[in-house]
Length: 528
Image: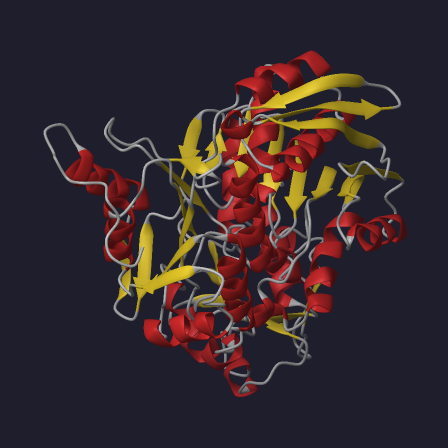
């Protein structure tokens, strides 16, 4: 692709020397784009990114040696400019924000794939995965070919796509621009007319989504998370606000403390179709959940009420959080032209979502329930435990197994310990992606907030051993919650990333202790 075509609309300009002219831009052919000097090839455009641990400007010389024919710096840059004075040196260009520029470059490289497709983004601390999957189910039931880009999985129609992160130890988030726009191009090729995207705070802060415009954007909620990256709740909020200057319709959780500020940002950003959702009986939104009824482990139902529509919503997914998730999904679908009967049918028949209050099916002899959930923030953990308390029967215990991630926000650890001790009957504190930290140090941070007068607890550092302990010592009727990992099929420690499936381990443990022909006593061990 010609360089002049590639940088069009990306706010990139040529840093000219006296002998240079724009003819160079018109003539130069680019064969690849890279922001990693190790992956530069002959004919590459090298983009310098400033990170927290490294600065791409330091590797300009390496990129040139490997064949870069043009380099984009950020602002004035901080590097040795003498390499550009030599004969045959690559072109030097600059952008005010190279991360933002990189997103526009890849968007152009893949032919502006979002154009012509209806894009819907969902952002918030919790609920993004649930709402996007609900929307996909609704639109698929309405015979649309859909795409989904999420933290659990990505789909083009019914085909599962893979995300290949350069950092194998990173959790899946909104993909980097190369993967993001490549996937959008695949979806367009496959005939997708509507695509649902989980818009993470990292992606918004780093302008990964900057070239896109959305038909609708959904705000689920905002609670403390990722503060190791954002630094403060205010910065975290600002990253979320960005999305609402990029959309035609805003669908906002009016029950959330930050909902009003998101609505204000949407209005300032030029969005004039702002709709508020509410499940609060004391507050009527544009779309409200009325007569909410818990069906225990069978889910929830309520009446969706708006100026234009009144109809019953029923979901087999239990929990109060399901009310807002389904309400926002239904409201979004209605605003985008989906018939209420298709919404009802899709939500009624939609099963559980991988790692989101997902029930693990165990052997027949296991007379207790195991649920896996991605809850890894104080708010999510509290909601998870309150959900379980809301449908448990008299005499049933809630057993919680959880830990906290290493190299992540440390401030939430003691808070999660306190929540666990207040809302669970028995707690197993263990590891959860300790990364470079010592697992025992993380556990110590958790126990600082744990009230040992409120709940029984054991500490088992090895998570697999902790799962076996929970299954072995389960009592009839127990509701056992594995919190934190959710859909993840790996564990990260100092030695790297290893395969780890909580579902597989739980099933193996149940079969070992309660399978056919096994006479293991369900009597609790001492202290549980």
